[in-house]
Image (cartoon, rainbow, N blue to C red):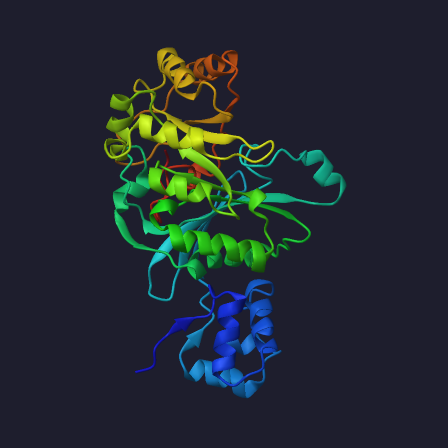
Length: 368
């Protein structure tokens, strides 16, 4: 029985060990590395820099590139594309392409006008880290899937490569931001997620300053993440202004409550000009009052932080309502008057179930 093993996800050092085990010179590893991560090949037969006999040997041993297959695309009226990607074992996840960024919430402060004057375009890719999710946030459609398994580093990187190839994008010429905010909790797949980040920086060529990872509050991993020499920016899902309210929508708060979470946040080492991001999904009549906003102010006092406000994106089986625009604005203004930068995230791809909290591998679209 021939085993199947994926090349995508292997570092240059690991590729070097592989080719040397086959009696090949070390430069073959660099050729493989270039083909996988920069040329984004999907088949070993396409790596013309490798001798035919060596490509044949790799195939005979069961090696495959491992790039996910684009099974379906759903295109929004706003240009957002939700991809259903299939891996070699048949499992699927979703990855979202948002052209021209997403309203500025995830960028690093670079002026978009300056980019355009240099001929750059920009986009954000929302990446999954698990098949489904185990965290069970009550307002999130992904939670309805449960968790099937964690993704490998190659499967995480492969989502990005597949989407970039589909759009013909060069990371050297066009600005790409990555947000690890798709299906799954990245910090419950920590080692694979971090290896993927390192590959994206060293092999694909996307700097960590253009990446943001969101966690529901896995406190021990926040502390581990703080020690990483190469790391994206950190976003923390807050979604409640007190323990009782947060626990009602995020059961994970029973394990790591707001005191635990905010303690880790206060200890987190920030780079020059860097801010922590707190994400707050506003649920109509649940956590969206001015009093809730005042409690958030008290929680974040003294932190170098900003808040992204997300009016609930609706979906089947979600037992909450989207708040009124007036309540969203009142919440935002309460934070701003207290000196906390607060931004209302513009929903992208809501009509195709691509917006925050809507990723559930939905293939039959209905009017929301």
